[in-house]
Length: 193
Image 1 (cartoon, rainbow, N blue to C red):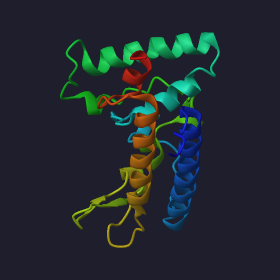
Image 2 (image 1 turned 60 degrees about the horizontal axis):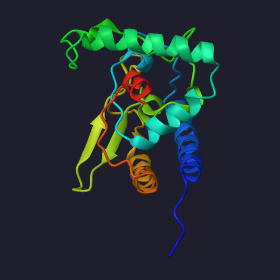
Image 3 (image 1 turned 135 degrees about the vertical axis):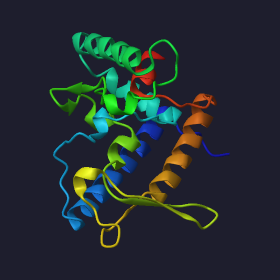
Protein backbone atom coordinates (compact mmCIF):
# COMPACT_ATOMS: atom_id res chain seq x y z
CA UNK A 1 0.00 0.00 0.00
CA UNK A 2 1.34 3.43 -0.96
CA UNK A 3 1.48 6.15 1.68
CA UNK A 4 -1.13 8.84 1.34
CA UNK A 5 -0.04 12.37 0.45
CA UNK A 6 -0.23 14.88 3.28
CA UNK A 7 -2.04 18.19 2.75
CA UNK A 8 1.39 19.89 2.54
CA UNK A 9 2.49 17.44 -0.19
CA UNK A 10 -0.69 18.31 -2.05
CA UNK A 11 -0.12 22.06 -1.59
CA UNK A 12 3.33 21.55 -3.13
CA UNK A 13 1.73 19.80 -6.12
CA UNK A 14 -0.78 22.64 -6.43
CA UNK A 15 1.99 25.25 -6.27
CA UNK A 16 3.82 23.40 -9.08
CA UNK A 17 0.63 23.30 -11.16
CA UNK A 18 0.04 27.01 -10.58
CA UNK A 19 3.63 27.81 -11.58
CA UNK A 20 3.26 25.89 -14.84
CA UNK A 21 -0.12 27.51 -15.43
CA UNK A 22 1.32 31.00 -14.89
CA UNK A 23 4.23 30.34 -17.26
CA UNK A 24 1.88 28.99 -19.93
CA UNK A 25 -0.46 31.96 -19.52
CA UNK A 26 2.50 34.34 -19.86
CA UNK A 27 3.67 32.57 -23.04
CA UNK A 28 0.21 32.56 -24.66
CA UNK A 29 -0.26 36.21 -23.69
CA UNK A 30 3.09 37.07 -25.30
CA UNK A 31 2.19 35.04 -28.41
CA UNK A 32 -1.00 37.13 -28.66
CA UNK A 33 0.83 40.41 -27.97
CA UNK A 34 -1.32 40.88 -24.86
CA UNK A 35 -0.34 42.46 -21.57
CA UNK A 36 -2.90 42.79 -18.79
CA UNK A 37 -2.84 46.28 -17.31
CA UNK A 38 -6.15 46.09 -15.50
CA UNK A 39 -9.43 47.27 -16.99
CA UNK A 40 -13.18 47.37 -16.38
CA UNK A 41 -13.32 43.62 -17.14
CA UNK A 42 -10.60 42.99 -14.57
CA UNK A 43 -10.81 39.51 -13.06
CA UNK A 44 -10.47 41.06 -9.60
CA UNK A 45 -13.72 42.95 -10.21
CA UNK A 46 -15.65 40.01 -11.66
CA UNK A 47 -17.95 37.56 -9.89
CA UNK A 48 -16.22 34.17 -9.95
CA UNK A 49 -17.08 30.94 -8.19
CA UNK A 50 -14.38 28.49 -7.20
CA UNK A 51 -15.08 24.77 -7.03
CA UNK A 52 -12.27 22.94 -5.24
CA UNK A 53 -11.63 22.20 -1.60
CA UNK A 54 -7.87 22.25 -2.22
CA UNK A 55 -7.93 25.83 -3.55
CA UNK A 56 -9.97 26.93 -0.55
CA UNK A 57 -7.49 25.29 1.83
CA UNK A 58 -4.52 26.71 -0.09
CA UNK A 59 -6.02 30.18 0.04
CA UNK A 60 -6.38 29.78 3.81
CA UNK A 61 -2.82 28.51 4.01
CA UNK A 62 -1.74 31.80 2.44
CA UNK A 63 -4.19 33.86 4.47
CA UNK A 64 -2.53 32.66 7.68
CA UNK A 65 0.74 34.26 6.51
CA UNK A 66 -0.83 37.73 6.65
CA UNK A 67 -0.47 39.92 9.72
CA UNK A 68 -3.42 39.88 12.15
CA UNK A 69 -4.22 43.47 11.17
CA UNK A 70 -4.29 42.62 7.46
CA UNK A 71 -6.37 39.50 8.15
CA UNK A 72 -8.95 41.62 10.00
CA UNK A 73 -9.06 44.13 7.12
CA UNK A 74 -9.53 41.37 4.54
CA UNK A 75 -12.30 39.75 6.60
CA UNK A 76 -14.12 43.08 6.92
CA UNK A 77 -13.88 43.53 3.14
CA UNK A 78 -15.11 39.95 2.62
CA UNK A 79 -18.23 40.66 4.71
CA UNK A 80 -18.88 43.87 2.73
CA UNK A 81 -18.34 41.99 -0.53
CA UNK A 82 -20.96 39.39 0.39
CA UNK A 83 -23.43 42.07 1.47
CA UNK A 84 -22.99 44.06 -1.76
CA UNK A 85 -23.02 40.99 -3.98
CA UNK A 86 -25.69 38.85 -2.37
CA UNK A 87 -27.55 41.07 0.09
CA UNK A 88 -29.10 38.59 2.47
CA UNK A 89 -30.42 36.27 -0.23
CA UNK A 90 -27.45 34.06 -1.10
CA UNK A 91 -28.14 34.77 -4.77
CA UNK A 92 -26.47 37.60 -6.68
CA UNK A 93 -28.80 40.33 -7.86
CA UNK A 94 -29.30 40.64 -11.65
CA UNK A 95 -27.06 43.71 -11.81
CA UNK A 96 -24.23 42.25 -9.71
CA UNK A 97 -21.98 41.63 -12.72
CA UNK A 98 -22.17 45.28 -13.73
CA UNK A 99 -21.34 46.51 -10.22
CA UNK A 100 -17.68 45.44 -10.49
CA UNK A 101 -17.26 44.82 -6.76
CA UNK A 102 -13.57 44.44 -5.84
CA UNK A 103 -12.33 41.11 -4.51
CA UNK A 104 -11.69 41.35 -0.76
CA UNK A 105 -8.05 40.39 -1.36
CA UNK A 106 -7.32 43.52 -3.40
CA UNK A 107 -4.85 45.82 -1.69
CA UNK A 108 -3.88 48.96 -3.62
CA UNK A 109 -5.02 47.34 -6.87
CA UNK A 110 -3.00 44.15 -6.32
CA UNK A 111 -3.92 40.74 -4.95
CA UNK A 112 -2.80 40.46 -1.33
CA UNK A 113 -2.46 36.68 -1.76
CA UNK A 114 -1.20 36.63 -5.34
CA UNK A 115 0.88 33.46 -4.87
CA UNK A 116 -2.14 31.65 -3.39
CA UNK A 117 -4.86 32.93 -5.76
CA UNK A 118 -7.17 30.28 -7.26
CA UNK A 119 -6.98 28.84 -10.75
CA UNK A 120 -9.66 30.96 -12.43
CA UNK A 121 -7.89 34.13 -11.25
CA UNK A 122 -4.80 32.85 -13.08
CA UNK A 123 -6.52 31.87 -16.33
CA UNK A 124 -8.86 34.81 -16.92
CA UNK A 125 -8.32 37.20 -19.80
CA UNK A 126 -6.94 35.14 -22.66
CA UNK A 127 -8.97 33.47 -25.39
CA UNK A 128 -9.18 29.87 -24.29
CA UNK A 129 -10.38 26.41 -25.11
CA UNK A 130 -11.33 23.36 -23.12
CA UNK A 131 -11.37 19.90 -24.70
CA UNK A 132 -14.22 17.93 -23.16
CA UNK A 133 -14.10 14.14 -22.74
CA UNK A 134 -16.88 13.80 -25.36
CA UNK A 135 -14.62 15.43 -27.96
CA UNK A 136 -16.36 18.80 -28.03
CA UNK A 137 -14.20 21.89 -27.69
CA UNK A 138 -15.54 24.76 -25.63
CA UNK A 139 -14.08 28.15 -26.52
CA UNK A 140 -14.00 31.52 -24.79
CA UNK A 141 -13.15 34.83 -26.48
CA UNK A 142 -10.91 36.36 -23.82
CA UNK A 143 -11.49 39.70 -22.17
CA UNK A 144 -12.71 42.75 -24.09
CA UNK A 145 -9.53 44.71 -23.33
CA UNK A 146 -7.46 42.23 -25.34
CA UNK A 147 -9.37 42.92 -28.55
CA UNK A 148 -8.70 39.32 -29.57
CA UNK A 149 -9.67 38.20 -33.08
CA UNK A 150 -11.26 34.76 -32.87
CA UNK A 151 -9.77 33.83 -36.25
CA UNK A 152 -6.16 34.74 -35.49
CA UNK A 153 -5.74 34.65 -31.72
CA UNK A 154 -3.85 31.80 -30.11
CA UNK A 155 -6.02 30.14 -27.45
CA UNK A 156 -4.88 29.16 -23.98
CA UNK A 157 -5.68 25.44 -23.73
CA UNK A 158 -7.03 25.00 -20.21
CA UNK A 159 -7.60 21.25 -20.58
CA UNK A 160 -4.36 19.89 -19.08
CA UNK A 161 -4.68 22.25 -16.12
CA UNK A 162 -8.24 21.20 -15.35
CA UNK A 163 -7.21 17.55 -15.57
CA UNK A 164 -4.28 18.04 -13.20
CA UNK A 165 -6.46 20.08 -10.85
CA UNK A 166 -9.02 17.26 -10.77
CA UNK A 167 -6.31 14.81 -9.71
CA UNK A 168 -4.97 17.15 -7.04
CA UNK A 169 -8.49 17.78 -5.75
CA UNK A 170 -9.18 14.04 -5.51
CA UNK A 171 -5.93 13.50 -3.59
CA UNK A 172 -6.78 16.37 -1.23
CA UNK A 173 -10.28 15.04 -0.58
CA UNK A 174 -8.84 11.60 0.15
CA UNK A 175 -6.21 13.02 2.50
CA UNK A 176 -8.59 15.31 4.40
CA UNK A 177 -11.95 13.58 4.16
CA UNK A 178 -13.51 16.82 2.83
CA UNK A 179 -16.02 15.53 0.31
CA UNK A 180 -18.55 18.38 0.19
CA UNK A 181 -19.12 20.12 -3.12
CA UNK A 182 -18.02 23.73 -3.18
CA UNK A 183 -19.24 26.73 -5.16
CA UNK A 184 -17.86 29.79 -3.45
CA UNK A 185 -16.47 33.23 -4.07
CA UNK A 186 -13.20 34.14 -2.41
CA UNK A 187 -15.23 36.02 0.22
CA UNK A 188 -17.24 32.86 0.93
CA UNK A 189 -14.07 30.79 1.20
CA UNK A 190 -12.54 33.21 3.69
CA UNK A 191 -15.62 33.56 5.88
CA UNK A 192 -16.56 29.88 5.81
CA UNK A 193 -13.49 28.57 7.63
